Amino acid sequence: MDSFTETTHRSWFSRIGGALTGILFGLILVVVASSLLWWNEGRAIDRTRTLDAGAEAVVAIAATPVDPANDGELVHLSGATHTDARLRDPIFAIEVPAIRLERQVEMYQWSEQRESETVKELGGGETTRTTYSYQRTWSSQPIDSNGFRHPEGHHNPTMPYTSEQWQADRVTLGAFRLAPAFVSQIGGARALPVDAAEAPAGFVSDGSGFYKGTPASPEVGDLRVSFRVVDPDGEISAIGRQQGDTLVTARLKHGTIALLEPGQIDAITMFEHAHSANALLTWGLRVGGVVALWIALALILAPLKVIADLIPMLGSLVGFATGLVAALLALATGSLVIALAWIAHRPLLGGALLVAALLFAVLGAGQWRKGARQAATSTTA
Image 1 (cartoon, rainbow, N blue to C red):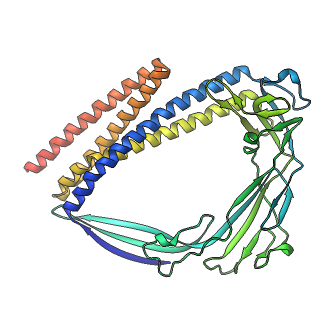
Image 2: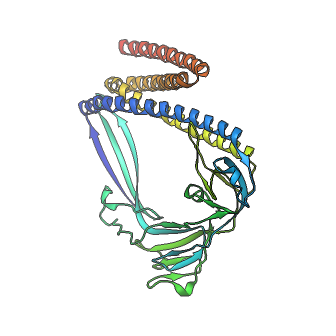
Image 3: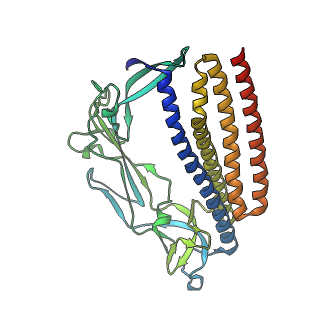
């Protein structure tokens, strides 16, 4: 592993200029994060309504035969998948009967990592020591070595092949044909062994995949190619709209339903799983939105810390205070946006969230006043 260390210095004037510019980015990020939170709440509510409506309307049917009486209905069925398709990788000549064939290509490449340590100085300047380290690793994504800080001796060649997948055009579940929205959800891929005797020119194989280079001592530019396949006879359960002899995505008033799970799963359980997935996504986006608001507000308040950094100890104190204030204001702003979104859709729950937002705002204002008093006391001393 190679490593290089660089030392850079920023004056107080350079830092304050950067902090003032950061205010603009902070304001833009506030708008983006708030929009994300608003959209996420509307999406979550619509998804919940869609799943609730689906759970009430779904009809359990047999996978065979197709009953025309259920045409247009939201249906649930279980059974074994089937396809007559033979999928082929045109480059490596792999051909198998499958629902999906996946090719994974990895190349041995240089990667860059960086670690920085910053020391503040009296007068507001700061010195940063950055260490760039380079090591070789297998990666399925091309790493652009032109962007390295020290590209000399760390050149990555162009990947000659990329990962790709092929999917069967016609897949059935009992007597029903599955629309692509369902086929793409079928999982259970397994590793596909290859015939070592059919390794392409320039490649070797141990039966698990193809390798270009020397497996015992890989060099930058070496390739390894492996394959995975989804077999055509797996057991699944699906919920969608019956359209003739095809299972398609159901379109309801507030959204769509196209659920699929492996095995024989009843409709109630599938809808419970869908609600859980919706809740997980909702909370993930909420956390992401609030964190983005925290970063945005920290950027907006950053000039106060830089000004206080004229005296390093004071700067650390103000930095802690502004970070805490930014966190509390992010919680308040996030809760406010979420509350307003819920008020627009569900007033009762939205009101409770609005109270929480006001509480965080009060706490944030209190912490701000406390931090300002401490800073004033330190300056006087």
